[in-house]
Length: 381
Image 1 (cartoon, helix red, strand yellow):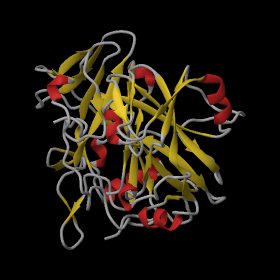
Image 2 (tube, one colour):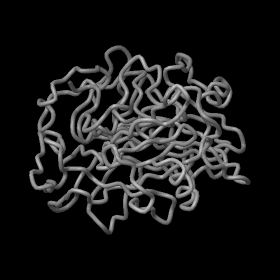
Image 3 (tube, one colour):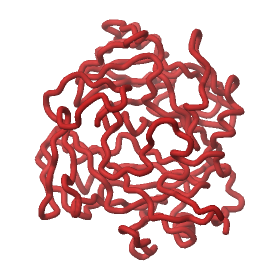
Image 4 (cartoon, one colour):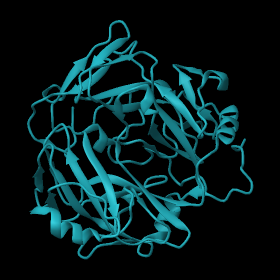
């Protein structure tokens, strides 16, 4: 059985085969950069690589009507080489890195950007800038030019080097986001959220008015219920899988009665109460909830490629019961009480142009977060 169709709505996210077709044309590389590799191509996104140098900046900025190069000339304090073993990015400072990839988009395609999962879980704050554009993390239709990434380590000083993949690119034609009615129709056809092994009915799920599903934090039954970044740590080797002992960088947070209090300014890793699955013809993005219900900054890295939490039998039928989402959270201003089942974020769904050749996690040489629960970044063992 096929997912419900939305006739007359042409908008969609591009998938892996379309990314491959655009390499060398719409997606290019800077001078002296290695070609884009197939390992960078995900079901509906492309991993972006840091270039060969970084600028230490006095402040972050938006280009607006000025080129990024002009802003660098005025705000850069120092230049760091990312070649070889790379450079140390100090905690709390702002850096700007030209990316290896550049764009020459077709007139009907726009781009969106987001941090990769490991980036968010290491509390590396990132956002992508494009020349003379007044918004972060997007490039307008037909954009032609370079890409820059602002990087600011917030919890750990980090060593970064050329080729490290901190962010992702998504390409969109038209309006790809599902409306609330379309999302309800998809949910009736294929449940997207589970409580353990039990699929939640559409009546048990909270749909917002913007085509999203509200997700809740899961504290009960987990010990620890969360992880909190330690205040003083050694250098984080970002690209080295399993390089660090977990307890050297993280403190366990317990919630014996299904509640805990967040310390202002501290960074936390939680997991969702719901187990999620994203069908092959769709992708999803995690978005913050209304700030009126809590003083939280959450979800630095919230894109779910096609097939997250999705498994099939040999006949192509969906099996299993999804995967929890990891929630990256920082409390602001005052201590903040978090309780089991509290709404933490929204999950918005997007249609893809077609089913990708490979779903999320398939064929990866390294680990993915397909089997995650309260899982830290790959740098920690």
